[in-house]
Length: 270
Image (cartoon, rainbow, N blue to C red; front, side, top):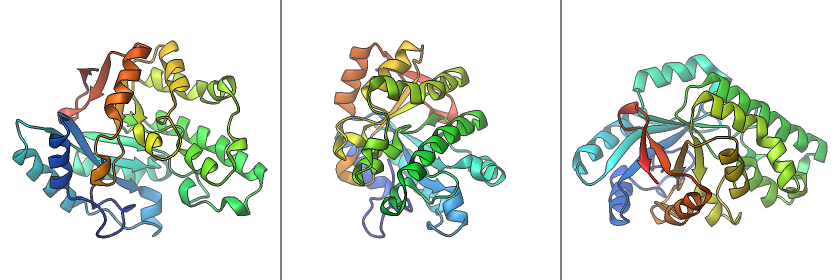
């Protein structure tokens, strides 16, 4: 979940770390992570505001102490596009010693973010090229490996659909599996978990990211490691849809979720 420090939340609209933790306890969660956004190239190039690392760290460790015995809180980061600036990304990770790092690709080289791309000004060919590049950059991120879990691998879907270009996405189950086959195999070989992001269920997609077909295929390929997150940016979304998605995952054969208290991967019963 993301606190008021996350640069993609407008000033005054987010929640404090303490408020997020209180809501998580209220809703019956035992383990959560604060993972504010650090899209490294966008920040260094001035498109996004810098992250107040010291403020986040102070608030997270105060909350760890306050909620001890009630809630396990992981000190985390959502690192976007780490391979775009490897030296700076690795220096940041070493300096702050996060317990949990979500590896994201929100943008490929040449655009700021799939969320802010000018779809109406791009041809179908250009947008197909961005999708191809996205898959290549997922491979690059997996090979780089400085993350705990690979985030929302169908992230561009949200914006292609929003801007009426969904016809450029893979049409049908077999086409989608073919598109992500190599990424899933590479992730399994890396022994890193795949994130199940529930935000799609409240953002008009009708499924988590990735969708259930891809999750079933991941299981078929031998993938067993998962993390799950609500991707909450506001109090109302803390833990949103996690119980129902966990039930679906159990029905697909998954039995555990990965967590990273102290930076070490351990398994929780799903």
